[in-house]
Length: 261
Image (cartoon, rainbow, N blue to C red; front, side, top):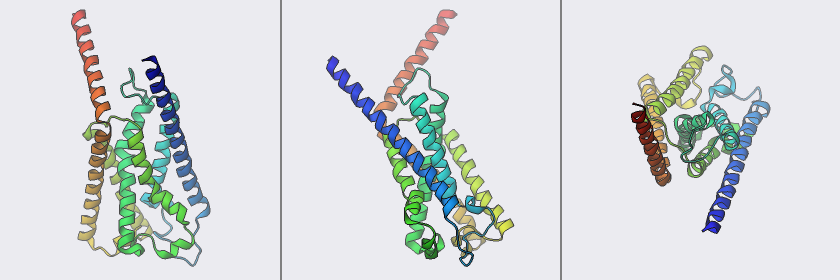
């Protein structure tokens, strides 16, 4: 029996070390991708710059998401060292609460939104989202870091790190604020820069653009709900364990309160 416990502890330690290594690799990858994009990806004067000059690279949701992913996986790494990945810790550290909320409200739905939308539009007409002329200045590996790896590593993160999703109201409020901020930023760029960031918006009239934005927001909500469902499906046993632990803790608090009375 003691040997079984020893083996379980060893396996958990190895799994934890691999998870920490993944968080480190992913955080470095996204951080380097952002650095490379801002430092080395420059468009020649004769090449039309997508989205114009106003707003720089920060006009793209892809860049917002890359920064978000770098921040999220850095928080994961910090949590690995000074927080906890336990299912039901006696006291949940603030860094763990931040990590769990960031994935639910921002990291997962935004990553899948960027990845799925980008590759769908690329399949329909790449000139609407990533003109072929950009291949000369935007390397393929960076394209995959920004638009492919974000999805792959989000799926791995869901499958390897337990979390309890926040209340749906709290999670969707955070996501709604994030997406509304970006849509507002698109219109600021349109007003001051005179262009739509994405060529697809140029071919849509006003009613079509409104529908496009509403569908985009609805799609983000759908991705949030999918992330919640996927997380609960993967961690069904652990969530039951957490619920039982919380129920026992609440009962103990009630009994203590009655004892005081």
